[in-house]
Image (cartoon, rainbow, N blue to C red):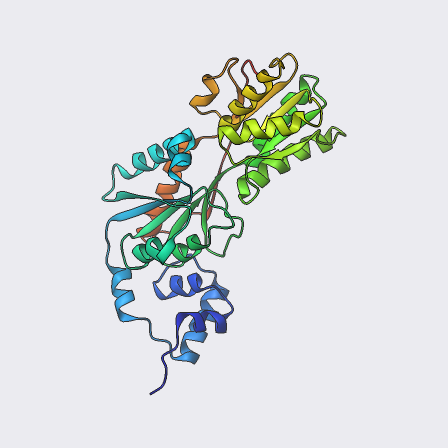
Length: 331
């Protein structure tokens, strides 16, 4: 008895990803004409027959979507960014028939999360705060339509992305510091396993290059308050900058604590700019100058794109939201 061809074999023969084959089989429009033709030819050549049970599950609507956050619960519940994203998503879902499932995990031992999604637990997924090391997320993205909140480091054909202009936001923040006469400017980045961190670092470096300067120092954190304090202490171990651009408000608050512990005054000695314009920015003394990213609007847009996709429409694959500098006492 001949072995039935697998979806992986079809993908290999067509020279595309498994998820692209899945999209073709399930009738998605988020596939280029070239990829569609290649997959259809591979299906015909291999006499591929989709698994009947899987197709049945794919066609059965659960009226549920998942928000997948590959972080630990301390990070999720401690960062106002996630609260704003969830608020935006639930706002967009309020007028729909869909319920939101929240899945928080830094790993997927036993493949439980991916199996839940693959076995028809939800119709689609929203994914935020993803890292290059989150391999289990790829298995989820192969199973159902997804919308990424923030550009994935390795974006694939047909991926839907809702992001903010992180390069422009960081550039604007750094230009503001330059406009106040600061020249020894350091940065505290987020984890460089995330595209948002790399984009903010790119914007920071670009502004300094335009001014004929080089970074005073670059240290990485993990978007937590404690990591911001640790990174600031590492910067101070090499000397004293006159400004620091920090890639999140939480890390900026940690940096402010570390600066004050050494007797450094903000903004007199060191100006400080954060990123997010979350509630944290107003909790510090002085309040943080920061880059406002529209977190609620991002969550709302992510859910809107997914709902249109699930309804059979063809939304834009990329949505970029603007940022805005908010000047307060720290710079």
